[in-house]
Length: 584
View 1 (cartoon, rainbow, N blue to C red):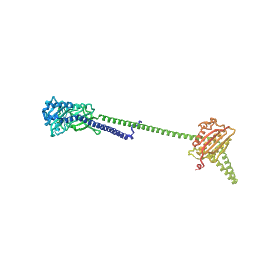
View 2 (tube, rainbow, N blue to C red):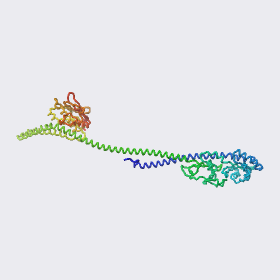
View 3 (tube, one colour):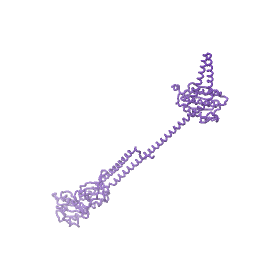
View 4 (cartoon, rainbow, N blue to C red):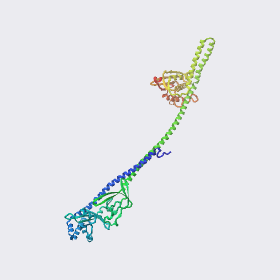
């Protein structure tokens, strides 16, 4: 089964990760936008300040010209003696041409034009009453008056007015200097950002974009456009916009305005010297693009991280499934192995028992003869005891009965050893004295040895304690004795040497015969390997193999070697127990 992308246990962590990712993307967007707009605002403030300073610097020379002309003697002479008007007009023209002023006018104390630098319109302008204009009214209070207007052609002009003071300090006339704003704006057209100066009527009077000039923003207007000398037919509506707040700033979004950025951060600054407000329309699209880019990068990084986590989780899930399947397979294999081991153990136990029975079959004739002797003696002793009782010889009869008891004890020992050897041992290892086991085994093999003329030469010790199984150890010894007797066959010398010793923490049992030895000694402990003739019915070639396994289960070792001259010797070595361990 294919593992799901995310386990049910990870459902809530995944949801939490998605929510956190959304929060991080939003935070990165807001942070980048705020930072970008903050930088844009600082840049806009610099742009507005520089634009205002530049405009003031451009107008400052005309302001100073107005001050200078208000104190010029020829202007004062004109006001005192009006017969000098033509000569004064020529003078004003020279000054205008020299300084770059559009026009220079001289007014009397009532605010009417006395002389002008304009030759073509001189006759028309002489006598014009400007007493109600803002600049002249300000000049009457001994201040520098300013005024701006546009003609029917859309040409915009800025005016400075200063009073000409008499000896008593009272205004006796005025000087007005007119500046052509189109010429000043020509230097601004290369600026990247839109900068416009708005008056109190909300009309853009000065701008580095010609299309924005004379546009009126009603939302910031404080007075009607009629407060200034504007031809209303030339005043257009400022482009529509919506204000949206983002990153702690107000962004103006214009609908259809070719000269305006689509989204603008507007920076405003009052310019009291010219009685206008400067506005810089800073393009906010780069800041918005940077914010979107950072948000996209953040989302991409989080997506890659999430994909990596998903792949990792999927891999872990697949690994867990694979491990689970392997564990199940291992469990099944272990179960099969355990079952097979149990079957093999049972088969081995059956083989061991069969080997015992084979040995018993080989020794059955000798054991039968061994039992017949005490049985015959018991029968004779019983008949004699009966006759002795009839004759009244009770002491002799009791002696015969004692002899009968001794013979029955002898038979009991033979049967006890035979029954112990034949049973299946299932008990764990225990403390066993090899000397006792050897004695019992020799007892089982004794009758066959006598019947076949075999001599046992035994050299043993009384205490040889080991951890083993009594019955299985006896089976090994009986098997080795039986094989030794089988090997003697027709040998001229039929001797079996049995030696039991203890040295260096080990118990060693050596059983050697005087037979022909083993032809292929390296295969002595292989299953089903035998040197006996086929059909001899003396074994299946499993005795030594089983004996090797039994001794190995005791932590010991069984080995074989051919002796010099003739015969073979089998050596059983087992770890010896100390006297204290044996007594526990």
